[in-house]
Amino acid sequence: MNNSIHDFIEEIKEDYFAWLYHMSTTEFPRVCDFSSDILASYLIKIYPQESVKFIRGRFDIWSHYWVEVNGEILDFTIVQFIGSKDNLPKFDLSNAEYYQKYFGELLDSPFIPGCYYNRYKKYEEIEMSYVGLVNGNIKFDDYLELVENSLE
Image (cartoon, rainbow, N blue to C red):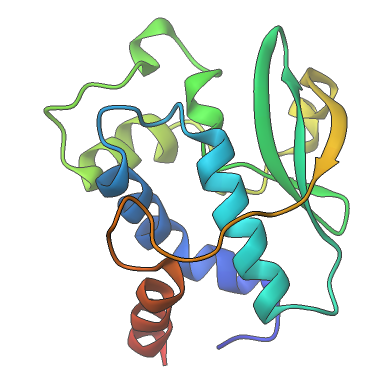
């Protein structure tokens, strides 16, 4: 595994996106709390020396959750708010097609560019609650272990 949290996120971003999409296809991308809770919990576990926070707040007028890493915003579900109305989920797409159409074309990284920061309003830091199984399926830790092994 790489030493940098940025490198780690960049290497797993498509796999994490695919996992989220698979776990909650009919709701994605409106799973910001789920996505951020799991990701923040995992990052704290593998990068305890970094400042990782699970945040509740707003994006423009909408309630929203995201992760902050050393003061930077990390948001895998931002696609629900930016771009055109065509950015609403269309569940006939594969996760790869969805990633390309709704994430890849808008932003090149889930680390959000500073030009969007003024649209985020933080209300509070939330205690992470992820403890294991997600909807009775594979634990995210186990899933990411498979991803990490494939990156080595």
